[in-house]
Amino acid sequence: MKKTKPTFITKTLYSVVAAGLMFSMAGFAQAKELRSADTHPADYPTVRAMEFMGKKLSERTNERISVKVFHSRQLGEETDTIHMTRAGAVDLLRISIAPFTDQVAETRVLTLPFLFSSDAHYRAVLNGPIGQEILKAFEPHGFVGLAYYEAGSRSFYTTQKPIKSLADLKGQQIRIQNSELIAATIEALGAKPIKMPFGQVMTALEANIIDGAENNWPSYQSTDHYKAAPNYSMSRHLRIPEVVVMSKIVWDTMSSEDQILIRKAAQDSQKEMSRLWSERAKEAEKSLRSANVKVFELNDISAFQEAVKPVYEKFIVDPKLRDLVKRIRAAAP
Image (tube, rainbow, N blue to C red; front, side, top):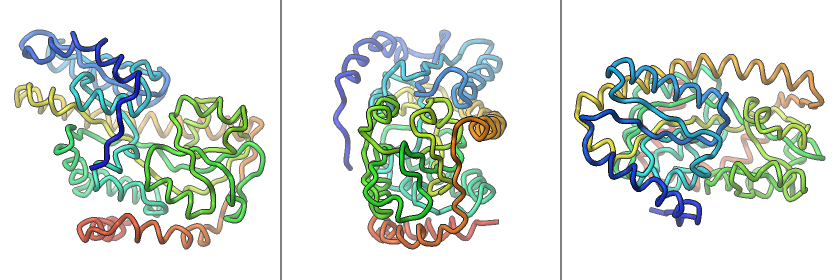
């Protein structure tokens, strides 16, 4: 299993939360505040949904268990928070599933390009038995998968040359999440993938270190990336879900009754997140289309779909993963 090395900020934050971890391991008979990490800003749907989860937990335990959300990368970038959650220094983590693809094999399938035919197909898979099967796959790696959060479809945005066809991607340097599978996808499409922490993208766009990136409407808006990269091309090449996971170390210290309450609160927050996401996505798209953003509709993506076929062949070798892909495609409404 491939693992990244903890960064300097990770090591620093370990020491900061060490005292909290000692209390966490002492037992949960007393009031317990679960620490949750998120890279998005305070008003983002994922943050609000995690706060909703905390509210439900507090209500159902007479304020014995609550959640404090550390948003806006207060506990570090995604890689940092993965290490901290595995170690038990962070209790809950809301994160894109993409950084787990090199560790949890089953998550690779959900990051395959053009896997889902529609939003309805995407939701049917995540909310059904296949989605639960993938969440369970986190446990051997130090996490307990609790729920999925929506993240819409991802499309390309660029600073100079817009993406109107597959040929337009050739040679462009595109920022991606930390995933070998996504890197291979971008390479298959003819561009050069640049792995970069989420918080560094705006500076890189403004300094022309990268030519563009790819993300959903709300993230494109909340980061102000549209100001530096005003060309948004509706490729919808990826539909990568967010995931809410809990540290297995912390989970195992809790009573079965509290585990049930936490899982239920997370599932309830998933429904709230879907509502918040739908509102935010519509609002962001409408606002950006009215702003100085040039939107390019890609009605024919057949060339894109053909170009990424080798990605499936390279990363989906295990018969179990191939069967998972087959079942996901068969689940289309």
